[in-house]
Image (cartoon, rainbow, N blue to C red; front, side, top):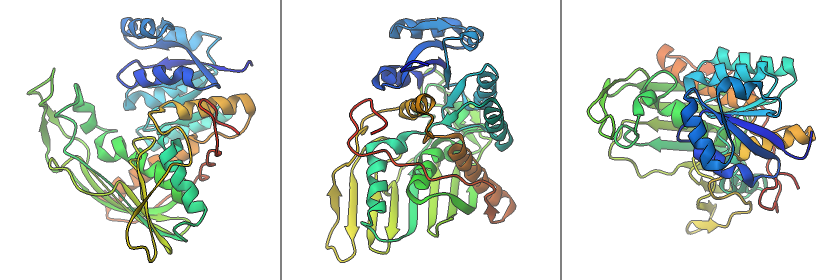
Length: 368
């Protein structure tokens, strides 16, 4: 198979830039082509990065390409993943894994039938920030984990994003946009979730875009924009999460805190790979900031795809895998279901807590 997995990207929107920039950073994969429904856009992006620009059909038919990174809009995630799998290619998709649970299950089932790997962003939990926190918890720095809180509070995206409408349509909203970062980090830290409850609302049924080029256009909001939830983790801890696009004044809140029998751990922004880590152990007079034990603390988007490429080469499990992504997707739907139906939603799926990255990796490495 060679020492690098040949990769093609489908979808050349904003997020593709960082994947292409980081493509040569990892020893396990090589991005050789990109494609888009707008072939001219794909060719322009390809020229920037010295790769081939193709149509989607050409990329899927290319025998050199073993793995697809799917960077399409959320509504197309499952359909493109299924196309890639049918073409005999492993596939790694941006978050969310899919819009609907049944779509995601179909992707996982087809991958199993074909003997192919499927993975999904976010991969920020593999960065130095979250990985250091995983080690601190495993090494007993805060004792037995008891609970957690997670907060993502902002005023929405219509003031800065050039085309923000999809954030307020099916598959969007703060839970589906930012929830994957927070929930994936929490599962990496505390393990799978057993049950969730929640409350949700649409505070502003209509939004006005104030960013260019669509300034003044109206958005009809279809999804909850303020979601509060409770998580019961299978290992015992109880967590709370708040995701909101309805607070234009922002908030002064931690990103994630983990509470243990021996102290409290402040976890950095799960949307980033690094960031400050603070701890206050039982009996301590104040908080202390701790150094990172792991690398990949800068923007390393594509790390999860590279880890999957390494798994293709070696046969070991990959960390940002479909089972983890599906578990997070089900939890997000669970908050909405609990809010709509006034029930406690029991999770049907579970997953393994992702294997931590080894200490001492050099840049570009994923295995010791």
